[in-house]
Image (tube, rainbow, N blue to C red):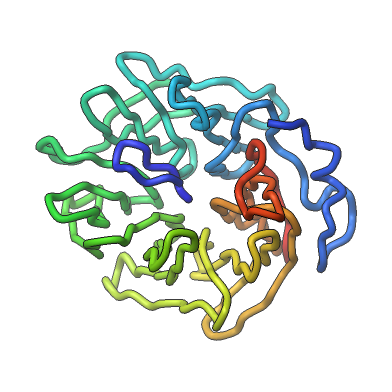
Length: 309
C-alpha cells in the first residue's frame, strides 16, 4: 500500500493505549513494539536511519494535502518546508542525511531530495521526465529506484546516480501494479501485485540486485498473502504474511531460511522499513485498525517500531 497518489496507486479513533496492548506473539515488553507517531490523521510510509525517522501525514482526505514530518534524535517532530505549488508530499527513503520524496503538483509528480544537514530541497540528478509521472523513490548510496508512468502501465526504473545510467527493471500491464519497498546496500525489494477479484490483492515479492541486475522472487504460501517488504544491506528481506484480514505476521528471510518473528492482530500493515543497528534490526511500519466483520480499514494509521534480533 505504498502511496503513489499521482499514479493512482495507493499505498478516526484515538487508539494509542490499545495499540500498546495488542496481542503480540514472539516478543514481550510494553515498549516492543513502540508507538512512534499518532495523531487524528493517518501517519504512514515511515522511513528511518540512525537517530532519524520520517513519515507521511494525511492522505485520508482528498481535500487535505499530505506532508512529511521528521523526528531527529530527541527533538520534537517538525514538518518539512516543501513549498511552491506542491499539493502533496510523500516520504520515500532515507539514506544518511538524504531524504527522498515524491512531490505532487496540479500538473504531475516528481522526485526531490531534502538534505537534512543543509535544510534544503534539491532535484535528483535525473533527465527531464518528459511529462511522465514519477514516484515511490528508494535510495541507497549511488542507487535510486522509482516508478515512472508509461503509455502502457507503470515501469520500475533503477538508476545509478554516479554514472547516470538508467535501466527498466520491470514493467506491468493490465490489472497489476508495482509497489516499491526499500533499497539498502546493493539490494532493492518491491512487490508485484494483481487483483483477480474485487476484494483481495495477491502479490509476489521481488529482490533486485543493483550490481548484477538479477531478480529473485518470494512467492506466497498457499492460502496466504505477502506484502510490505523491506531489506537490510546484507540482503535479508523482511515482509508481512497475512492469512486473515485481521492478523499479520512479520517474516524474516535470509536466503532460503525463513523465520516468523511476531504476529499482530486486528491491524493491517501497509509498509515496513528496516534499519540495521548493530546485532538488532529496527523494523518501522504503519498499521491501520481493521473491522473484523467487513475486513475494511476502520480508523487512522499510526507508525510503530519493532526491534528484532
